Image (tube, rainbow, N blue to C red; front, top):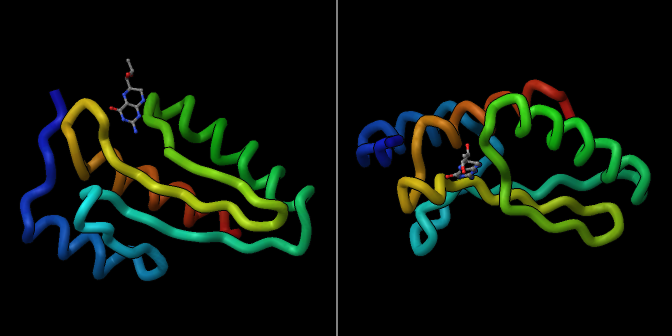
Length: 96
Ligand SMILES: C[C@H](O)[C@H](O)[C@H]1CNC2=NC(N)=NC(=O)C2=N1
């Protein structure tokens, strides 16, 4: 069972993950990515999907044309865990 992050650990993670915001109501990390068109957005989603499968941890997300909205939280823990921080780091490492 995965533990939710403590307030201190969450604040530390947010400081490190520059582009991500914290949704306090959902206890989730959120970020929006913009691309030049749908193809580029969907190519990014494909890469994230492969990361997520490898990690066994999956984003809640949506796509509208060139925009991909990602929300990370751990369903099993009922909020933010280290798994979300790890996945956010890996998504950022794609360099989108
Ligand atoms: C069995 C499987 O690993 C679990 O159901 C995983 C799958 N992906 C998941 N993704 C997310 N975001 N939260 C989870 O709790 C979760 N659980």
